[in-house]
Length: 67
Image 1 (cartoon, rainbow, N blue to C red):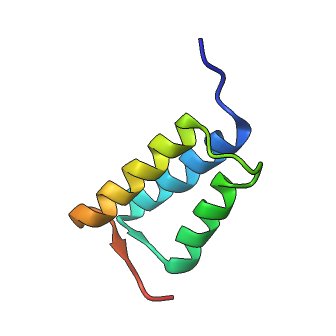
Image 2: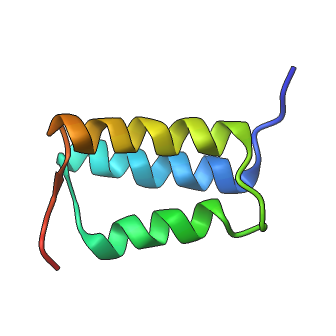
Image 3: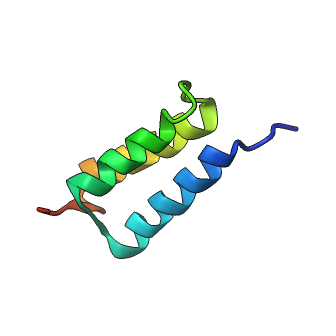
């Protein structure tokens, strides 16, 4: 059984908010990246969440908005 890091939990909440809004600003995206690297290591759970976000941005499901 794997343990979810606290940064992965926070990261999921931020990404879930972007999914619900269907939009993200460059500042929010930067906050997400900084949170993922907060402990100096991006673990597998964080990597999967970031990949999900990137896929949704590339597919247009989440729009990158101007600041």
